[in-house]
Length: 436
Image (cartoon, rainbow, N blue to C red; front, side, top):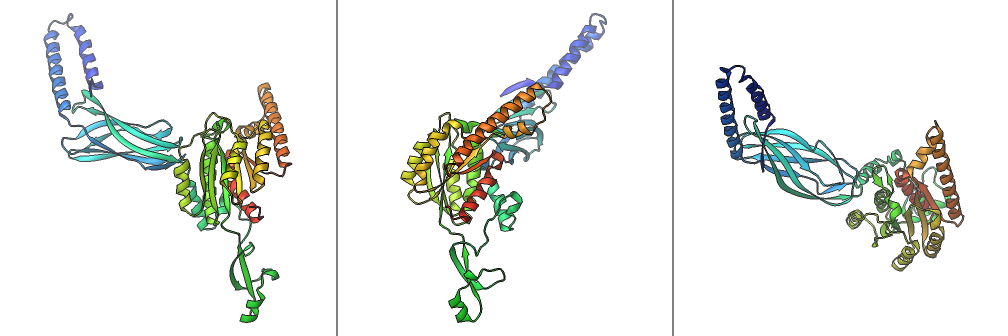
């Protein structure tokens, strides 16, 4: 706790000091000046005494226990003053690193025997467990000649998860059958799958091969067998945690974009009756076997929310060997990474090993800046060199991806912002084509 002079006291002292210059010029002014100085001194002491007697406000913080990555949320501070007169104060909430904040400081008046509330917004940019520890306040004396700084321990803990808010948005659109608004395409309507669902009356547009002739003869009207996509299939996502996934696109790393995409894919898979699991490699080895149902989302969130990309190199062959050992049932294996040409040999070995039992899809991220550079106009020599370098890199990258495609590997090449929709659409297409 520090007692400091306020701006008002400093201003009055400066005025008094300037007025002291007149003392040698006007001897009669000296008595008036000393009286003013005595009055200011006594007033300052009295105001300081009153400030020291003021009780500190009791502070509590309201903070969600879980936060979605990259989404704005509100934080509330409550200042209680049950014991003393009204308080004039300013506040600052000390937030941990990895958060963007808006208006995390301000001033307010706490009435006598009452309380006041302050609100500000936070946007987490770093997953994991975080602790909000301190709130700093500056309390002003009644005449605002003094101020008292204080730091209170107000501990709140929260967890920052991958963007689970996107799941709520998708669920709302899916309920209204509007998922096409975000680019998700359903590739097959019920009635055209491979798993029997129910019998119903024949409708215009039904194929003749769908007619159940026994039921038709028994009921004396055309009856159709309705099918749906096969359920109880399994998806396993192999997520690269190596150094390439540290690449930033916007505010998030490639790893964060992948984790967000896998989370929404798990939700879509659960609605399709399929199970999804995740394994990480490249510095962090964490495995969660496939499961289905809405509860799988919380299971995945709690298991992987705190994983961060490392500075290790990804070992695709080791990851494939471990997955084959763990995952016996045929699955769609999705490898999410940021590939380079030097990965081709090890990656082909890994995909051959996986393809003996599973279907394999490689989701490869490319840096958004490559597309941005190509779309920029060339206005000077520096722009021309940058454009030529980007084009050459894209060409080499394209040659590498075509060689992978030549080995009958399912490949999704996309920017981070297009990963989620592209991954879900590819999953639905492979499911419709009975590739899983």
